[in-house]
Image 1 (cartoon, rainbow, N blue to C red):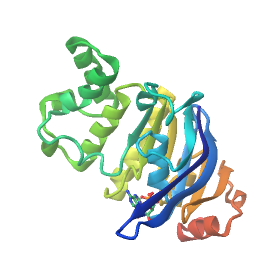
Image 2 (image 1 turned 180 degrees about the vertical axis):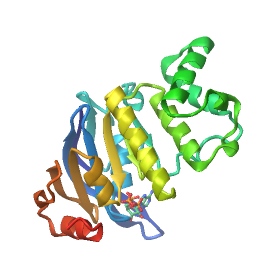
Image 3 (image 1 turned 120 degrees about the vertical axis):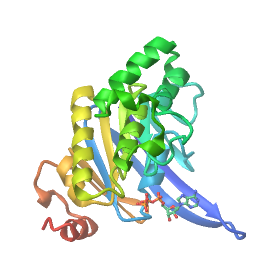
Image 4 (image 1 turned 90 degrees about the vertical axis):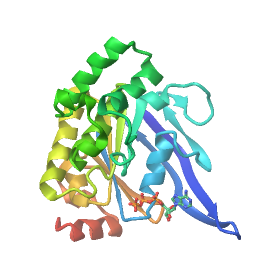
Length: 250
Ligand SMILES: Nc1ncnc2c1ncn2[C@@H]1O[C@H](COP(=O)(O)OP(=O)(O)OP(=O)(O)O)[C@@H](O)[C@H]1O
């Protein structure tokens, strides 16, 4: 279970150290094996929240607890393995000189210290799981399509058997059929591997299609958090209603 307690993030930038609140204090928890969506327009603080949950952005206040262990105060805990963030630009962030196989195996060396044979075996399984042909092991990222590169990023994140996967705009830049396919593949993976799934998205249509619980962010504030099982009347905040309307859901 992941608990976010009183978590906030303020950036200061420029000569005058102007303060910008990216995430106002948020307290929320993510139960194991459930599906969540964090929805909001660009700049509302979704990515910053995701990065804080994944241990990649130090909060200004508050803390994140993974299975009761604080992420930002205790050295050497296991959260970097347990919580994996597939970032918006994850596909293009693959090392262009590293083969797909080596890219997927890299976290197996860092986190699980598997030997070469075990790594190769695990990599084969991950390629299969993510619908990539075994022959891609020796290919370079530039020899793959954008969708295939995204699948490699997902395989790489899955390599360490995380308890929670966060997808930040999982399908940005893909056409509609590919978007649907990748989302279906992610949902299938979640069903078979049973990790907690958090989708970060600006797309309310995606949120209502996939999530058991939906969180709506506006201007750094979590304005609504509701369980969802198909009935859009559970949303009460004006901004949630605007997002629903914009997606043709009301
Ligand atoms: N490292 C940083 N330094 C200064 N400001 C930042 C930094 N990272 C994010 N911000 C600002 O924090 C605010 C929230 O950004 P964030 O990326 O979390 O929003 P978002 O909802 O994920 O947006 P998008 O959907 O466009 O990715 C924005 O105003 C952004 O400019």
